[in-house]
Length: 63
Image (cartoon, rainbow, N blue to C red; front, side, top):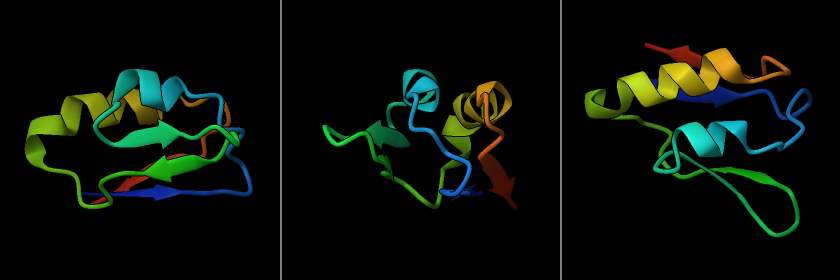
């Protein structure tokens, strides 16, 4: 699985980081960083929750 971020929509509100800190990080300048673009199956549930809870719908999963 690959995570795709639409940075035009992303507000870096860190909900994704709360759901999946292994995958997402918001830095001190409020920029979202993807720590793992290729996400292992073991993190599927966390990634799906992050995508589902993103208030701006800036995240998607590519299989």
